[in-house]
Length: 171
Image (cartoon, rainbow, N blue to C red; front, top):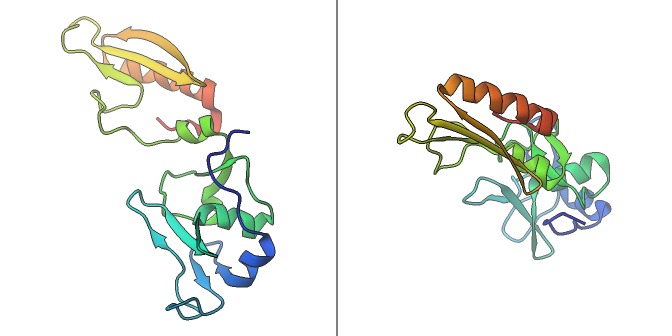
């Protein structure tokens, strides 16, 4: 299918090892694990802000384990998206199943962005219409044209973004 994430361990094993607080999104160990006491916070946060928990010498994303513990089902082949974009917020109300395209539409703005807004490029050498809008879905680009003001470009982008991505659209 389309999921990049590995399959999770069986539900019964995760339930045996971990407590999960659905409101805070915090995992704690039910049992002593190497140098961790029962009751201590499980896992580590990586450089990208995701929390990972090691079970049987394999690391698993905490948001995927949360989905498993609440629904009793591995989200595979789907991804699990953080609605608010905060990779460390694993509270269950903040998680939802998503396709890779839906998940990527919920990304925050890229560091190399020239306009300060997703899907909008600023071209200083085009003074009449310097804001170009191009939004993509499923490897298909939708060029919406160039606009004289940032406000008009944002409006065009938001209309198309909501049309393409629905609830997963993040401006």
